[in-house]
Image 1 (cartoon, rainbow, N blue to C red):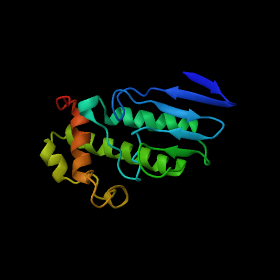
Image 2: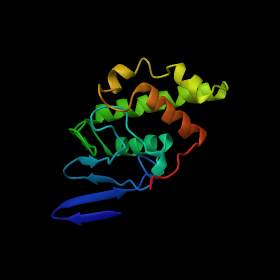
Image 3: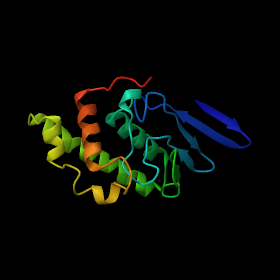
Image 4: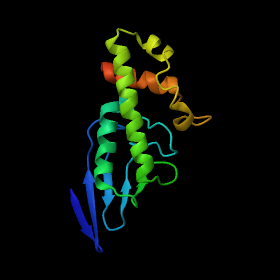
Length: 159
C-alpha cells in the first residue's frame, strides 16, 4: 500500500512470517527512513522472531532483504527498540542470518538433534558482535530458534 501526505510518500509492506505474522515495514521515501518493526535487532543484536506468533527465520531474512532493496547508504533503519541503524548494520544482520541459516541447516542435514546443534556452537564466531550482555538472545537461544524454525517446530501460541 502507498500513502501520500504532506509531500511524503509512505510505502507499507507486509513481510509474511517475519518477526511475527503481522509485521509491516514502513518506508518514508522522502525522509529516507524505514521502520523495520521487530525484523531487525534494535540494539544491533540478533533479531527476535516470535514463532509462537507466526514469525520465522526465513521471513525475517525476507524482510531484511526487502529493506535492503529500499535503502541506500544514507537510509536510517528504525527498529521497534533502540537507536536507528544504518544500511551497513542491516546488511551485516542479513548476512549473519543467512550464514546462521546455512550452518544450522547443515547440522539438521547431518541428522543432529536440537541439543546437538546447540552444542556445536554454530554462532560462536558471531556472538561477540550480535549478543548483548544481559539480553535473552544468546547464541544458544538463537541457534535453538533457528533450528526450530528450519524444522517447522512451532511452540503453542501465547494466550
